[in-house]
Each structure stands twice: as C-alpha cells, then as structure tokens.
Length: 233
Image (cartoon, rainbow, N blue to C red; front, side):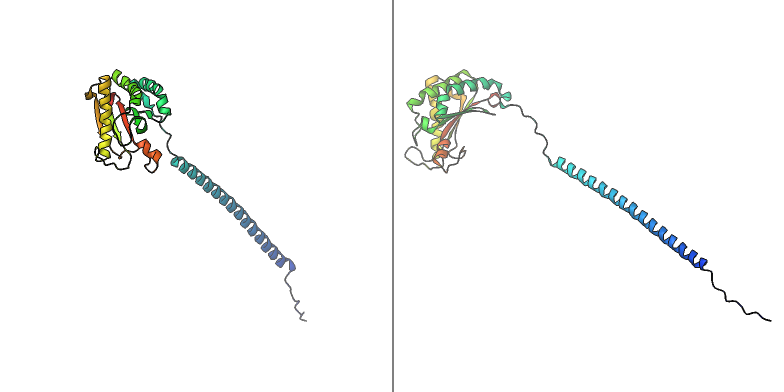
C-alpha cells in the first residue's frame, strides 16, 4: 500500500532569519553612512575653519602691507644752520611791532633768514622810493646784515596788476627797481658793500598768495631780504 506524500512547507524560521539579516545589514549600512556623514561634516568644518583663518591672516597681512611706513624723524630746520638761529630769534623780537602790523614777515627757511618788506610799510603804490618813516625798521635789518658775514639776496616781487607809466614799463622794472632801492639804502646808511648783495626782480611770477583778492595782492607786493646760510654764501 502506497502512502500519499505529505506536502512540505518551508519552515518559517528560514525566511525570518533572512529578513532579520537584511534588516541588520540595512541598519549597519545606515550606521556606516551616518558615521561617514558625521566625519565629512567634521572635515568640512575643519576645512571651513582653515579657510577662514587663512583669509583672516591674508586680510591682516594686506592691511599691514597697505599701511604707510612710519615717518622717519627729520632733523629740525635749524639743525642745518645753527649759526642763524640766534640772529633770527633776535631779529624777530626786534621786528615784532612791524610784523604784528602786517608791514613785515620774518621766517627761517632752508636757504636762510627771509624778511619780507611789504609794500604798504615801505613803498607807495607803483613807486620805488622807501618811505622815510620805514627807516627805523630798515635799520634793524641793516644792523644784523652788517654784523654777519653772510651773503644777501634782494628779491623784488609784484602782484599781477600790470603797470605802465613814464618810469616803469612793466612789473619787471618795478620789482627790480625796489630791490635796487633797498640795496642803495643799506649801502648809503650803513656802508654795507654792494658786493655782498645779489638782486633780482621777478614781477608777479613768484606769488605767495592768490592774486584774486586785494589781501592776496598786498602780500605779493614785497621785497624779500634773504640772509643766506653758510652753504648759500
């Protein structure tokens, strides 16, 4: 007698094991991916931080390079001509009233002591004769020149308003004539040899102020007496 075959069914444990293995592998995969992501995030953060520091350092370096170099201290002006410091201070004190009145200006330049005789204190408009009431001021300057061995330049200047009359054809003539008048006064009143002087007339070519105003033109009408330092003798 033949017995019928019993149907066989797969045991449920087998597919459950496979499913569990799959889930385990899937979890492991996500764990690995998460770890990689975290690592990449850390690396990205590190890279970002490195770039930021590099940019900050570059910006600081650029700022440092763009800054101008510290100025090198320059020696005082008087250091190059100490022999004129005391005479300049003395003359400035003696001419304080004239300077305050705007008739003169005294300054110490690299080339020497410069005393500017302004027209309103020494000359009439368009003329080259020195006012008698300016003789006392001229004497203060003459004494200093007489006591020093330095050479002297007399530089005449005018404003930009043209002049043309019987005596002067142009501002060139007027500026030169005023320089000569100052030289003549020093020679005749204090016996200072003319050979110590050089004279020039520049007309309106070396202004010290704008010629657009009366005040500026008044400053430009002048004779500069330059007591040269030893290097300019």
